[in-house]
Image (cartoon, rainbow, N blue to C red; front, side, top):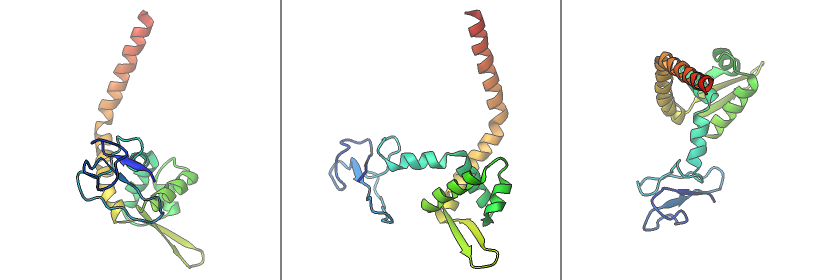
Length: 164
């Protein structure tokens, strides 16, 4: 079983230990883990903690954009591909599978001809959509400043390289 160090002490402490240093994550698929105390929590700053991988998945471009698209309501696969300019069908498929596995998206297949599949955010997915929307707003609001900063940095590096 993976171990999740909270940064408060011994990384090999067991759940319920006096220092509350870590918590063992069940390896059994489908088993839910609920952590309710401040002493026992997931810590993405620990390399063994699964929350670090989750943050990596959440921060991926296609995850952010697919969750943003689905925050408008349920969508079919082709609607998602059409909404997100430049994404390949392969990346949409991979990202949707990951989001479904993580419990952020549900996939509903209807027995119709032709078959119809609809993707929708779960409650957890809708909870995640809010902070991702804030990040998207921040990015679009600050993009001009970021581009100016990049240009100034690149020019300073080029000037330093030419004067050496």
